[in-house]
Image 1 (cartoon, rainbow, N blue to C red):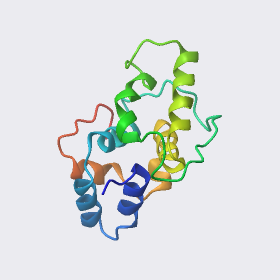
Image 2 (image 1 turned 135 degrees about the vertical axis):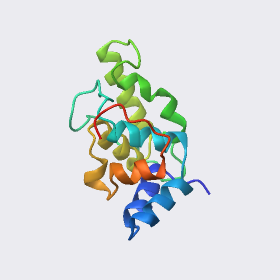
Image 3 (image 1 turned 180 degrees about the vertical axis):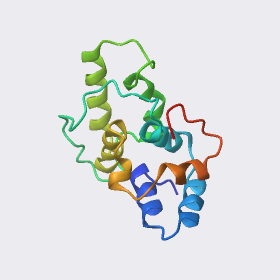
Length: 143
């Protein structure tokens, strides 16, 4: 069974010990999950989007019927970060809003929090925990 990104983050956050958190991150390991966590925790990844709330219309489709998922959309995330692509700022912001509107509300929340590096404020997951679960990640920013 496939879990949505916010469901995975909630499961990890609910885990009582660091060992359990690491085990869950390893269990649900996908390129998209690692990408979201790198965006959030790597200081060298710089958002090209305005900080704060995004003016989008949340997708009202019930979970499981949403049009897209972060798992599918992760291949486009590079457009929103410094060095990722050379699109006009207005186009970048429009693309981000369209992506958010295609995601179920929980996944849109994950993406908006990640762009502002605030996943750790919503879910109890630390950079150290992510580093321990995915030792192959090379952090570009300060630890």
